[in-house]
Amino acid sequence: MTKSLEDYVEVVYVLIRDRHVARVRDVADALKVKMPSVVKGIAELKKLGLVNQEPYGDIELTAKGRRIAAMILNRHTQLKTFLKMLGVSERIADKDACLMEHILSAETMDKIRDYIKKGPPKAP
Image (tube, rainbow, N blue to C red):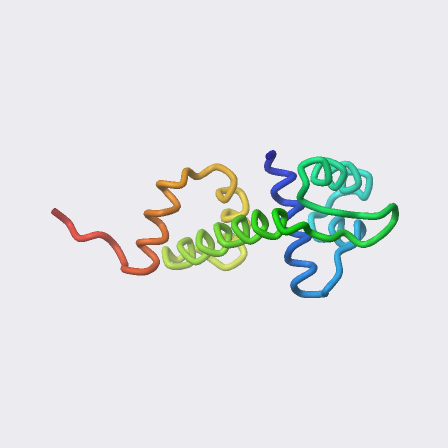
């Protein structure tokens, strides 16, 4: 899945969690993109079985979509927490976490999770 599709599914998840509804306009506003881009992205997510949407209707996540979106949001949250632990400002930590969440390996994410839970590793 591309970075932009991951962003779409994550935003849909957050909108439904926070507002109980996700519409194309809401996604476009949240991501600062044009509505036709969202329509195209949602069509791709439908093909992947991550969302359902009737024409001009609300966007709904499938069970698979919720699972993937929760995983992406969790990565974002952990990265943001890690960056803030390093002293990065809230705004920049959020922005950088959004970029990083799409490219870091599972191994790196595991190490970041460990660091957040236990603190820095002990020197040999």
